[in-house]
Amino acid sequence: MYRRAIKPIQTLALCALLAFAGVAVAQEQKPGGQAPRFGDPKSKPGAPKSKAPMTITPDTRAQQRSYDFKETNEKLSFVLFVSSKVKKDVKAPLIVALHGLGGDGNFLVRDRLIDLAEEQGYIVVGPLGYNVGGWYGSPVVVFGDQPIDPPNLTELSEKDVMNVLEMMRKELNVDPDRTYLMGHSMGGAGTLFLGQKYASNWAALAAIAPAAFLMQQNRAAILNAIKEAGLPLMIVQGDMDTAVPVGNTRQWVGTMKENGMKHEYIELAGGDHGTIIGDGMADIFRFFADNPKKR
Image: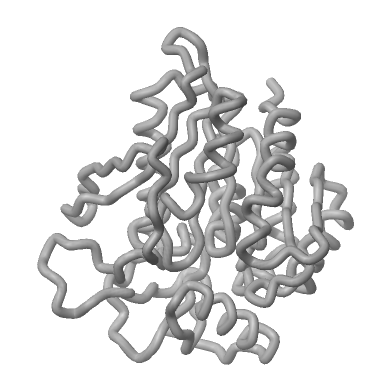
């Protein structure tokens, strides 16, 4: 497998990001290559091949769910919130929320996000992404010298998200014209990747402090695909973020401006990698409400 050296700015950013998530960085992976195993080699067969998520107290309003992931014969978790305003006979908007590195669905589906979803009548689902470091199909950061296992982590992580989306469509009366994708950090990178790859599924996208370091050089192609699909994109970033430096995100924003795509960028003064989630959430809901899919 091809591995290239991380540039100094990427090294600093990744170290900060991974320190935030409670793990250490070693190397990066080229898109399309193999993905690493983030697990205990002594883990029992059938157990998810990942470290346990960061300790996050679930919001009591969210449902803790799981399903049988046929690809690996495992049970994978996801987190679901359904507003009390959702009615069976009325199509409801859905947000698929992708967590950051080291977390699970509870990392995003809680607190301010649930407050706003309840007020505005949303369904919100937070997939695991196969494990806590799956990267949702986007280029995966490789850690340590552990053997790469499973070699198809990117495909598994991507598949998990799309499985959960399909389950929501079957179980609930989801509005296909108001189905949105958002994510924080690692999930922000996943939002950009899955947003352009499965563009027909989404009405709009929102990336919070996207850790899209390994897609930086390909951002023009990624953003052009999003533009061609007619997808509006919001990016929310704090200017004091030491995990995902504002300079990285400003490059994405500059490219969005250059290609003339429909977008909105919010940069919050004093915002860091954690506070940006709650502080930017109301704007994300506003952006989604303003951008249903056009038929």
